[in-house]
Image (cartoon, rainbow, N blue to C red; front, side, top):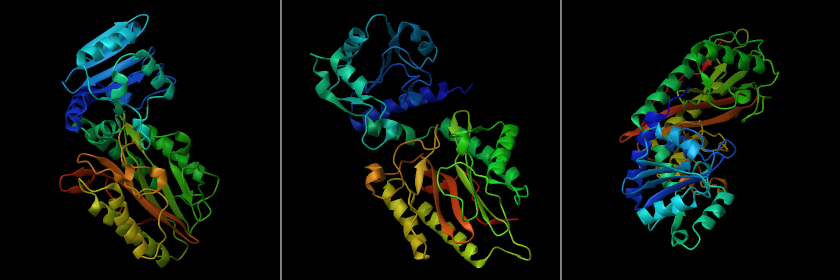
Length: 397
């Protein structure tokens, strides 16, 4: 079983610092029956589920209190992460009001966001319930969004988090090496998918997203590109084979794409159209990575990669250039993406030092298939350094 306890303690201390940075008095995470509706912030604050109505309160003063049902209290105490674990029996209302009276916060951050799903864990029903519990108090007028607290808490990886991601990347690369060393000609997408599962089991890897579409396998020009499931299309000479796979280790994920060209009889190398597209993708990826520095806005990083790809004569990719990695392959927070309406304000967020991101793009090569490349990077004070070993050349069989 994955032990997130050391990370939860790190993150709670980090949350106190973020409240001070943003001048917010307290952060309130309000949940119930989390096996049914799970607030994503719980992965960083608790690492376990809760049954009755519960409030996790982090204060700018440094106080961390968990207000939980009696039968959840012992499990929370064992974390040794909260200064006070307060159990109740009949209603959380009295203990919640008492805790807020103790703190008298002028700003209370709640988990709602119009743009970031990882910061939008407070359901409408629980918001309505909270306002009812606090009726007659001044606290309802002091609510604000916690999205910037949650975003930065996810993006600023602790040393332990980064270490676990490094290991997940290492395992994923080992599985790729074993998988793509096998002759691919004659295998279907579905068979490659199954083989990846066998190899991952050997290395002890857990898949980072739904197994049905992990890995994604695309063989040739007729394979639909996206988040689909492998099909019965059979790999033939003259095809590009694209694989998108990520594994999880100790609760943290990798997300990488790798490419192979299957040569036709008599071919010494991939065709010029394929090589040209590969080089354009590599150049665009590097242009985006060069722009990926602390303080840069997400849309600016995306624009650098997008401009380089179109400069080579290829169409824009219809997705963001980068997303955060963490306990999920798509971990929430800002995106390295264009200022499209569907991304809301996420492309306007500045890049945080300590962030770990997957950067990706691709092009379709007519008659051959899709080229997609994806690497994982760590943002340092000096820029973005590779955590993965980048695929700099198109692999061929």
